[in-house]
Length: 308
Ligand code: ING
Image 1 (cartoon, rainbow, N blue to C red):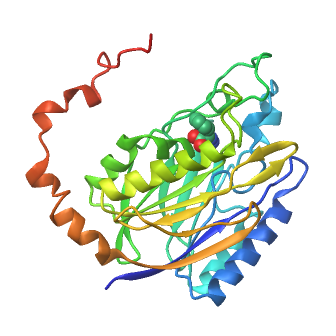
Image 2 (cartoon, rainbow, N blue to C red; image 1 turned 30 degrees about the horizontal axis):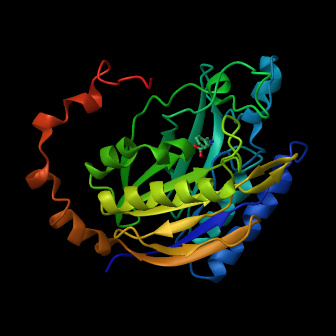
């Protein structure tokens, strides 16, 4: 058995006025709780250090860039890295990345148990829009503030297994899991910030959002025979409700633990990476069962037929 004791560290709301120091203190409390429960790895949400700022329309780039981290680690988050190393715990969290040459990404990192960054992922599927729409009850401006990820869907050998990452909207796309599945991924870490209501479909409420969250993550786990750890930033941020529903899903697609609240809440589960092997050797023996001669449309640009 190759066990990873995983802590999914769901976080409650972060208000626009709350600084990173307050947030890091909450993250440290979750990390100490995780240590007390024997965790080897703690997973925090997407954009874990700040409020979900892409809901706000900003025109001044300096104001936008205040939400971004220019280096990682940095003074604000260094206590996280130091505490993790002290606990001998690997860490994954999402943040807004501003690169030295001026590129903006919705990024997630993975460290080893000594606090060194071993993996970085940049969100590929950016939902929402780039322009303000007065018709919408609330905005979702990720296309305005981020560039699509430029490093694909890598996986890393770490924690005695093969670990991958994705961010939020990525979890709704089967391609996300499959590209990692084809690299043998055994555990996928995904943070998310998901509005409880659909700004484009007002009758779609939190129950539907929670259903789609479970559906997407369970399918990705089962269809690639891997563990998936999906962690929410939840609750009401400045009047905008977001779903909780953090889950850990096993390689059979079963939810083994699920958050009950919309606050800071730690889920811990002992994940056996060897539980991924049966599925990879039988149903999803990619080498034996894939028929790539029929898959061309998946990577073709022209193939996507627009809706009526
Ligand atoms: N948030 C949402 C998500 O994919 C969304 C956006 C919600 C898209 C519901 C479609 C339906 O969970 C982020 N940050 O991607």
